[in-house]
Image (cartoon, rainbow, N blue to C red; front, side, top):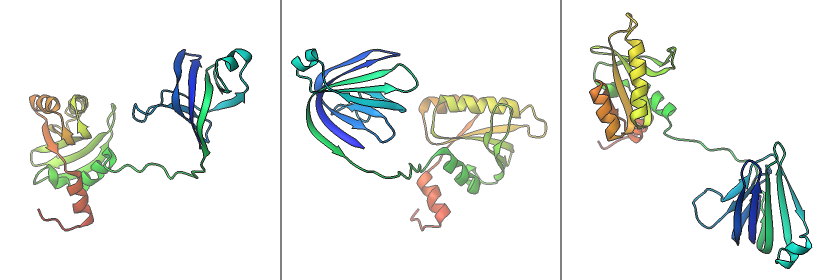
Length: 230
């Protein structure tokens, strides 16, 4: 990866046209061919960029550009379209290259698949008398996360990290379909999440769906057998 801090202006042309007036910015040239233009703000998102595959050419400024104080012209062209990123550099303040090697990738903890696995192993968190039937119960409109047997019949569980209205609507559609199956009906719904928004809870209660808040850290502790105070 090459990191350049430069005073520059930037023009993007192609599917859209965009301009950045001259200012000091961070230019990031990645090994995969991506070129990103960052300011010292705006969090992680670049001001402008060119995605790979792309080709970058460095050229001398023409006479008009030279008179305007331009010392280098970077032209980054997309290989699969007419998009072009042109960076006009007036001054380079820092230029360094770094070999980062192969990245192992992001490992996410606490995703919905982890919650599903843990709840299937700890199905009693839904209440006494519950037992697992299966995970990922197939339906014509998608899989139900967990199908269980409760004291009053079949239970369909929809799992989310953060429960919102869309999740309740999704479970409602599953329940409508499952309750048409005489082998499963009556089917009750459980909306389970680490956090449930008030609007989602209100909608769920209105539709007779029970809400369960899951403590992921506590569930992991039970899985590992780690001692707990409470």
